[in-house]
Amino acid sequence: MRSAALLLAYSLKRVRALTITTGLLLAALQLVLIFVAGSIQSSGGFDQLSALLPPFARQLLGPSAATFMSFSGIVCLGYFDLAVMIALIALAVTLATTPASEVEIGFMDLILARPLARHWIITRTIVLTALVSAALLALMVGGTWAGLQMFAPAGVPWPSARLVNSLAINVGMLTLCWGGVAMAIGAASSRRSVAGGATGLLALATYLLDYVARLWQPAEKVAWLSPFRYYNPFDLIIGNPLPIKNLVVLGAIAVAGFAAAYVLFARRDISH
Amino acid sequence: MAPISIRGLTKRYGDVRAVNNLSLEVIQGEILGFLGLNGAGKTTTIRILLDLLRPNSGNVSILGHDCQVDGLRARLNIGYLPGELGIYSDLTGREVLDLLAKLSNKAVAKAWRTELQERLEFPESDLRRPLRQYSTGMKRKLGLIQAFQSDPLLLILDEPTEGLDPLMQESFYKLLVDVKQRGRTVFMSSHVLSEVDRVCDRIALIRKGELVLLSTVEVTRKLAARHVRVLFAEDVSIAPVLPPGSEVIEAGPRSWNLKIEGPLGPMLRTIATLPVRDIEIAEAKLEDVILKYYRDGIQ
Image: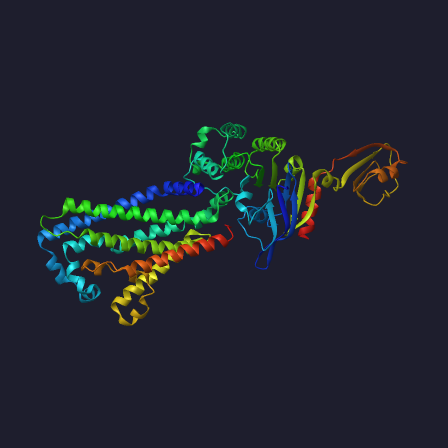
């Protein structure tokens, strides 16, 4: 346990610069979005923007189109913008494949030559991924509230704390879900690039599946396979509560990934 | 309780047997040289000892603890130097040593670490630098310090002098002798036969995953053919007829160059009637025996 804590502290120290930089960039993005939303709101531009929405975008957004094209909607964009989701998932995948990286460079040989059980390596990695993901989301939420304080025009309704927290929790679970998938693949791999690449391809494929299913009815039948199906920010924006099912499914995928990682890493040969 | 006990160890990669039914016991307080060509199975065996690789069959134990079943206790008293020191290059030498010392679950005596640094000429200023600024030799020295720093009962060293300059090799040999005198056991793989000859008590030679020789260095050396040069006071015209185990390399009127396997007595009795002026006997070399085993393997 003490050794695992030491290893966690060492790993956190190694990723602190990456975490802080990414977190500050994501928080800064929230500020920029709120500044832009405030400018549009002040100039009365949301009505014009809604009119400019092409039909396919209206179909994609559904009844949330009107809500999305509002100050509150643009503020929330920071939690489901593709670049933000890529940043969060990419960082989770990078952290979750830490064991593969340590095997690759040979550091795992030195660690496991000590009296340290293999399961602590996976436990360390789970805690590392969860802590860093939570820290990033906390910075994003902090950025949102700071941005609202600084740039929100007077009198305009803010997104509720429940909405912001729901978005953060849901995207956080999606991030953790991909962390779990990456950890399972990484636990059996000796190359971080292979594990990260495989997870990235899987994420892209399932993202496209979810995207296509929203526009093309026949794809709906298999869309449940995509983890992205269980993060529907537009539903949240129009005021629906965060579905527990989404959290359960994403959490279950993450837990299954972690469990697979424990088993695979315990059984594998450590060779690079 | 043997520091290392290997019984019927087999490790396969598909159809390839990296280690095949290997049995070996390391004696307390000895330095055992683990020899073999590249791909012979040395590193595979070492990695199984550390539970990094899982064997297909057989048992390995360290200090009485099964490496697979009771791996944590087995690894509690080990110092390990891998063939290549894989460490993130942004860490400083100090951070590496501190982290690995803490993971060892054993207190590191500051005086001992300082002594190791002094013996391997590794000053504090170097420890404060990140590893990306280290040369190959410095990384090797850091690897040696991390292996020795907790003063473990058993040292498992994979090619320990690879990348060290001759002076550092000398310091390392002295260090080995010192830890041996303090009752520590050393299991080291090496390609450098002169180093094995100098520091090891016994050698285990592995070829294609199988143990082909396990013996003391002294006995192994005796297996080597000795080169004997017989000088005559006057021309000798008769052809040399020598006992079995002797081979004529070159025969001139005033000197014969011979290669003798086994005792020299029969050969000396044969030449006793000849006008011998002098006999030069070159010391048997361990290398000759080892190389013979290597060559036989290649053939």
